[in-house]
Image (cartoon, rainbow, N blue to C red; front, top):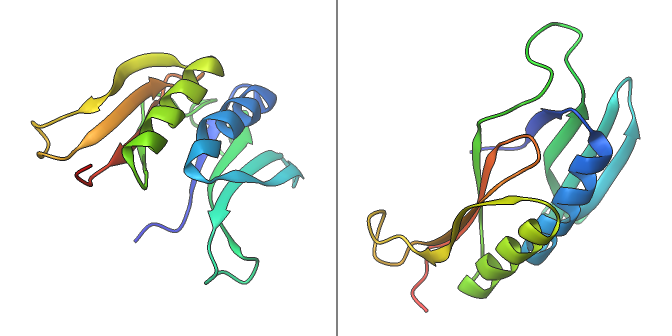
Amino acid sequence: MLDHMTFRVLDITRARDFYQAALAPLGYSLYAEGNFGMNVVGFAYPDANEPSGQKPDVWFVDGPSPFGGAPATTGCHLAWRAQNRAQVDAFYQAAIAAGGRCNGAPGLRPHYHANYYGAFVLDPEGNNIEAVCHLAE
């Protein structure tokens, strides 16, 4: 089971603004922002099982790691589960309005399974982000 993920970005303010808009329809909010030896932004969703009442699971770090590697995470595919198809639609619209690029408009993807309803957007770094609902509606 995944606990959290971190992506490196070239512009932390741009990433914060983009993901704040794109993830809001899925129930996410800005959880943390600051300099903890590096500029960091984190997003969380409500979770009563967490001590803080929120589960922070998506983090962005400004610039390259001091240990080497690429200056930004690019070309990844990350999908968030939506509670319904309306959330998928809202995610897509918010992400596009925030500067994302369409990589697959909301719709059924029956080649995955009969009820797979997803939308794909390229984020500012070129990652393929998705909201998906697996329920029949």
